[in-house]
Amino acid sequence: MSESSMLLLATLVLLLLLLAWRRRGTRGLPLPPGPTGLPLLGNLPQVDKTAPFKTFMKWSEQYGPVMTVTLGPVRIVALSGYQTVKEALVDQADDFTGRAPVPFLNRVVKGYGLAISNGERWRQLRRFTLSTLRDFGMGRKRMEQWIQEESRHLLESMRQTKSAPFDPTFFLSRAVSNVICSLVFGQRFSYDDVNFLRLLQIISDTFRFGSKPWGQLYNIFPRLMTYTPGPHQKVFRHMDELREFVTAKIHQHKDTLDPDNPRDYIDCFLIRLEQESDLPTTEFFYDNLVSTVMNLFFAGTETTSTTMRYAMMLLIKHPEIQEQMHKEIETVIGAHHIPQMEDRKSLPYTDAVIHEAQRYLDIVPLNIPHYATKDISFRGYTIPKDTVIIPMLHSVLRDEDQWEKPWTFNPDHFLDKNGNFKKNPAFYAFSAGKRACVGESLARMELLIFLVSIVQQFHLSTPGGPSSLDIKPEFSSFGNIPRRYELIATPC
Image (cartoon, rainbow, N blue to C red):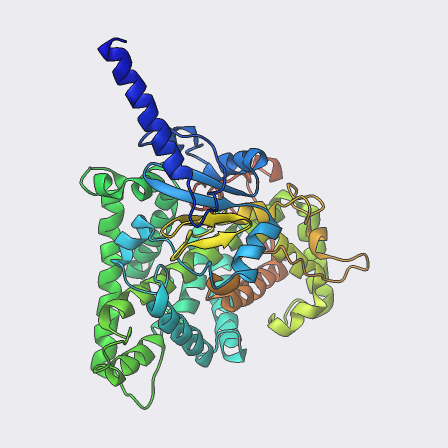
């Protein structure tokens, strides 16, 4: 055998051993099956860079609802279908609470904060954040009043357009962001505040970047990308601006803090920080405060406002649904009553439309990645420690066993035969289990009050008519990002 043939044979043997090593499990249980990848690159060349969840869904048809995929050096176990995702996130919740160290998010928050933490840090920060936000009204009457007041500002800003076309993006994000700002910073910002608008632009651009192929490339090869030029460097500079804003707000709070009368989330955190300053195991320190406030500001602004923008697009695309929703609102609460959460039980069709808009948008199709902080036994397989786990929300929100017409925008998915609102257990728009969205109750309240207020007061249309709207997302990587469009809000 020639030297070149021996080298080729040795290379093939090495690749087979590498593949076998990657496929091995622990304690005698195998890794889940999955597509064969290339050395170093894994399955990366096979993935649809513009919509990776589509590739994952196709693979799941061949390899099953639990499968192994490698993207560069990253080993991933993807879960698909309602039953599988539920079994992981709900039935085995303790095993699947880990959050993957997503490099892009980690770079933004410098490794601190609630969103991507694990273990004791996550437990302390989540418990504190939930209780503090509830104390300041999240999901309660006090918060409802704040949203109602903000809806007045939103409606007035829309009236000022005088039925001329406008991009609704920042009209909506200003209103939504002011709600979380009231909770976290203890203040709302004027819609004309240029610094506020600048921050909203940064948040929007960052979410869009994370949903483009370049953003996902950073997550796969962070060490390489850190030192290479590209749009990610601009995004990080802009996120440093957001950090500087948050830092300045925290310093202002420290200078004016009254421990007996906390005004907002930052005050409460500062008080706890001082109380536990001598406790070695505390997670209440400055870096966690800065990053958690950034988490809340970012998440509390972008996802809800994006969902509202898409819901309005769907109402324009389906004028008969918009008309039926308007009639129900007009019949039940009239033209002048300020919508409140109590109205929801009397607005089943409207409630169904809002839920269906969330399902159909499918805003984070792959979910925020989870992580195996230990070896996990699941459905006869072993998911080894340090494996990234992706419980695909897209596969739940489009599960054909759970939804009659999963690929169609259809409010009937949330209505029974008598027209009453009905829940669907596969409604995982906020994920599920112990890592479900912290701000779920706030987002639900905002979506109802803001959208009911808008449809109550305005007829929504677009210059080119319903046929001109493309409701397919512009980007579909980390998040499904709706296309920009021009809205005409004509007073009813």
